[in-house]
Amino acid sequence: DGGITQSPKYLFRKEGQNVTLSCEQNLNHDAMYWYRQDPGQGLRLIYYSQIVNDFQKGDIAEGYSVSREKKESFPLTVTSAQKNPTAFYLCASSTGTSYEQYFGPGTRLTVT
Amino acid sequence: GESVGLHLPTLSVQEGDNSIINCAYSNSASDYFIWYKQESGKGPQFIIDIRSNMDKRQGQRVTVLLNKTVKHLSLQIAATQPGDSAVYFCAEKKRGTSYGKLTFGQGTILTVHP
Image (cartoon, rainbow over all chains, first blue to last red):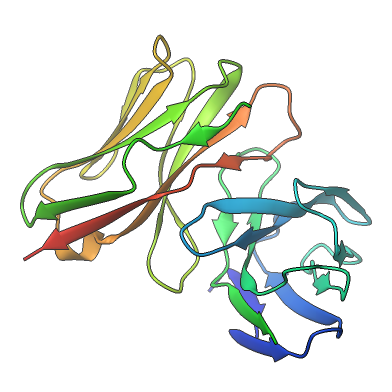
């Protein structure tokens, strides 16, 4: 089945540690996105990539980094510089001809 | 600033009733709108979308209405079922922004009582 996978579903880290969230898609989509969702709030864009080896900052990129070495993969690193990293992280992808974004199941990150 | 928002944060309906979820947007330059459904602990799922050159679009049990005069978007769900209980988000794309860059509203919680 085609889709987007995110792993792990739950992730726990100590403050001060960097952590990388995985996102893989087999939809052959060109564009991929990372969002952050906090309780009772909408989705806020962290980073997005429209093609391999290229990505742009979204609205809340500070404290995060990404890479896009392969079309199907778009990992997100939450660095120790992110002041409030505990959140639900969602990865999405879209084709180059439609604005509709397909979402993965999300990773819930808890930093203590 | 320019944003997408919702009139009501929660909506409770009885099974079988019709539901209307509203979304106000302030950016008149937006040319595409989309509704997503998010169940607890899961990623959002596409429901329906509409371009700014349309006023209405229908899907299976859902209808999206766009009123550009008052910058208002609504999602109508017919014969609401318990499985429709979720958070519903509207999102917009501003004309001229990078391809696929959507701005999401805060969401409305829909609760359907059997």
